[in-house]
Image (cartoon, rainbow, N blue to C red; front, side, top):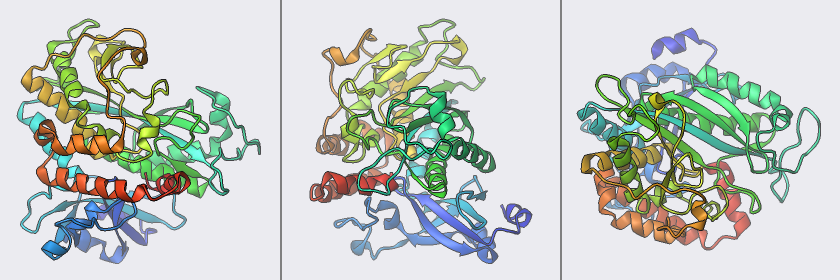
Length: 444
């Protein structure tokens, strides 16, 4: 890590940052001359900092604050190391960190530590998840009272229409996307295909599959930071909020995953289109956990505006082959790449908690041999299916009382997440729709 800074003498400051429960980067700005100390000894800030609400406020009744004296955690660099921050005007470096207790134990309230625990469960069985994510986001002109698509730097026009898979829409913001891809290369984020989506000024970039789930979640978290920062550099906003426009579809974060055994073989591949028993059991686990984990996939008030019938977001708990109306889809294609696509999460999620919930549910399904119901055909919205919780309050209660979530998440993270969401639920009720959008636009 020290060598990176020595190779980049132009960098004068670093940021050390960890993801809180809402996926917000929390940390410090440090002059480069003190970077060696951070690398060797880590840094410190209160455990409660990873348990702030969406406004960055303490949780009123959290035992992490006054009851415990607001004790410190120790934050150490992740294996990612330093990387540039191309969206800033002055040369700077980001050092991702994660939290441990004073005695060296992982801090269970850290979202990245939650994912590490699930990945270790896979490792104990000789299994390795392979993960890819589809990142949807909006480019937005938020300079006026109402949100709208930015003026194209190329044409000088503002085209107020959704343009699904439109090359023209991509070319309208060519300079932004060129800089974004260059930045992804600098930060070693594996950004692949970009497309325009069904929303107003909505785009999607796929992150390539990765056989390191921790790195895949890091990539998604860093990508969100990068996209928002690079958009501001270009004079507009980018947002991963679930649904900024009432009349257009919202943004999802679809996760594709398969699982390799100790010999590197895909345990979902049976040589044909159907998939193995392990695939079915993983699907069964995902479906069994879906209602209880809805809070993970829809963590904010605005999340539930996206999850309505006919809006390209799943509402029924079901699965199907090559069916994008289902919550869990088995894509077609080469049997060697047989995989599961989990389609429930919005773009506003914390990638670490989301991936923990998905991989944890799949593994419990494999462990328990959970048989899913029959795969659906046709339009899931038109079928009589068990429903994903349709309100924030329902989702909070389901997550809080779930026995299955206790098999996936540490008790401390469950407690902290529930306390955070109950506080946000209370205070969001006092705000207008416009005020809520203002909060979520830049944060999620």
